[in-house]
Length: 629
Image 1 (cartoon, rainbow, N blue to C red):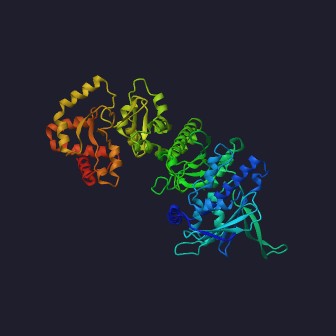
Image 2 (cartoon, rainbow, N blue to C red; image 1 turned 45 degrees about the vertical axis):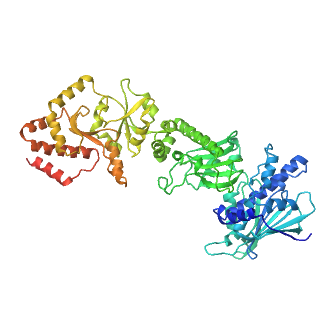
């Protein structure tokens, strides 16, 4: 048969140019595509064997790689079903016509055949690294072999060829190195092994390559000789495809450490297989510690995504909500909808169903860990609890139902407490879930605002994370119990009789409080008597949505709008403290001294809250003047 020269169709030329120049982000993808095509060819032969009882088994099939640096050739050979002349022309002569897709459609009810290549474009990724591609193929059961050759968009030739056995051999003439492009690496055994382990480690057929090693000559202590060893580059059977009964915790943990380069064992793993509207296998891990860059902009979330054992994405962020971004692992689905490139997922219903199912599995695993292994869960929460809180805050409370029962807070009763545990031990007359905010537990416990709540025997949640108050503000309540800061204007603790006493005392001293408010020059919204204080002379409370602690957080942010956000501060004076009697006495004799005292008391209250005072020098001088008298 004479060599036939043919051109690609015009639309195929344009598609091939796109393929070479833009569709695939990484040139190394070509090897994954060609290996996947070889796997498909062997699956087709295995299916044929089952239907026609030819006696061929999967153990008879495999893939062979050869790298020849001198000739700059990389050769991929399989003993799969092969192609006839017409199939060569139809499958390789028309870009985006996939024989694998047609085969899958014809045999869609056959469960034991997983066809990876479905879109007929992966083969052409070879032109990203090869200046010439040669395909020699012999169809199973045929006596004739044919060769397809192409140097790219100009077209291709088909001619008769010699081939001893069925299957396909692809010969890539690797390009010469160019500026900023190193093509030599695709002829290096170490690089080929690396790419196989990264993308095609779980292809079900062995991928073999002859690798040169040095060994000591027999009988010699220092003289070496070269030895060619045929190595299997892939492990073939993924751990997530195995039955749970076959695996021990040690197997899961070792896989995690090897796969994700973590020295620490994970706190928990989730091994699940789901069939139905979303069919996939997943192996997920809850790490013991956060990576060093977890709370930085550089951290990239995502799970490894496989299609029938072939990795198609290193980190698929769409499979995890941000609040579960700490989860590591992988998902393998046999029927994901992919677009023209396996690197880019079409964000369709299938992917969303998988993501939703994974979210539920992760939440259930965390709840189980919280219930059955509290110490482990608290360790997890120390590392990733802030992320769960951000999940509620950033969604404006939309994720409240999913996350609220996963939260932990330190408590005045000691240790961590869940919101469910807090509510379960609330006193009968307790209206609110009380919390206090500060930079540390020691600082919170010293706050004067906590005195009255403690005296009532009520539990106080300690908020030491910047996001804590913002989170509960978005939640508003838990099971109908509203959150209330101990620094809030109204704690709901006073009896009606106590309220009347305070109201009367404030009316009697209205001029004093108005004078102090005026002298504080808009620093506070009001000065008033406090019922919450027992031993401390003064404290600051707030009105409205923004608390003093939230003001501190916002003031540390870089944008001017946040820095200008101010809480509506109330300066509270202890009605039973001697300082109140002193202020009343001075107001009738020395108003200037009252103004000085007001400024000192306000500065003291700021310091108690851990906030800076405007003029520390002036504050200390005033104290010294008082002490000197």
